[in-house]
Length: 516
Image 1 (cartoon, rainbow, N blue to C red):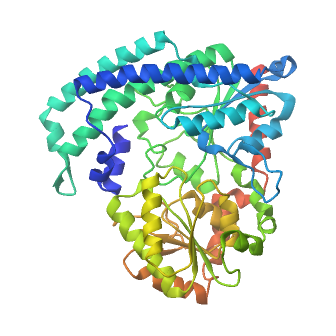
Image 2: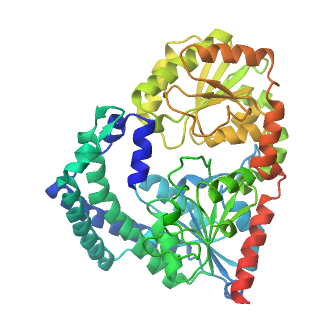
Image 3: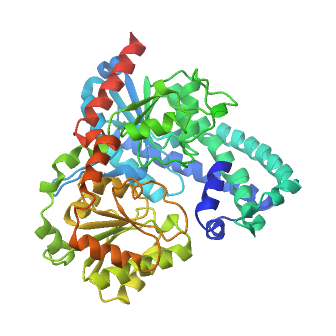
């Protein structure tokens, strides 16, 4: 947790990040504890009602062959890619793997319903209706006993925080880039010690109860380093000797706080107890470059990382023909004969100052080169950023469209000519589809992923530079095509469309070994 905060302090304004947190004093933090207990009870009851309404049951015959529990997130419950009117929803990360496993196994799925109850409950409803697997909410395992344990954890961490807060070394360590950030750092750490860590303990206990009840033979996990999933999926599964497989779900980079550990934090024998960090039994990554990073500076044991490719991208091998450009242009009021620039924003991950400079830079550049702009926001961005973008678009003459957050990102990439982003996974998706990419980084920090350094994308790092880069790309958009070919080969297993089959084979291998 502390490392993750330090990483954020280095990469964006701590003031903007701290503004989204409050300092929980004695009475406020206690109130939050009781309110969380009430909220947890309400979510538990609601999910139980959904599960009862749809009466999802396991198959006795399938259960004898093995039970696989997938731990995903609400954001991954999406429409299947394509333009067919009969589209259905499925889990973007695990859906194809679950289909490949089919009726051979009892498939159970879950996700945490927490700070986004509307999104979480909507996804839970969809999964309850789904015929592929059955939904069992981890939140349904909440109980008053777990709340009392959360209260004890709250008292423990609050006492620990009071000791840290009184330590004069905290103020000494609170100078970031030559500026005293003690007030902001105190607010952030106070929030995490008194709010986040007790909640993480609650999720760990709910996960342990779920595993004892469901008795899964294997866990497939997304976001295995998250403050919820690390506890209720990885640590709890280790305790019950249930193997875990984590699927890479985004970019891995050299300073990623969820993947990079010191040698003292990782056990070569798989020990998950203190002082070691609980890691998955296997981590399946996109390509050889990711494997080398995890087993190198990440210090993962070599036999715990395998290269499979990305199941979520298997369909991209056929995506180019699935999205007619003319139909896309008609849908969004664009001219199919003019260049379309797609900008995938990450406003929620940037400081307010960097956001303002980035928005202005993109709109000025697209206007200057006479292109059309499609703005696809990250699904987690709040309404505040949408309003910023709408006001900025109204001030420029370029044809600009802010598309729905939940719209099909693959359609946007296929039908665009150039992608602009900072470090989004949409960069990887654009490279798979052989689209020219510009990394726009106005944050005065190093790129998280070395796309520009590795020769697969163009870079723009100062005001006015994006216009020049776009002009060059309009004249010659094939200058980095060889680099994109190398990237697909080294970082995505060639994107041969067989990643799902490889992951399903590994799942069967582990289950056969477990029952053998």
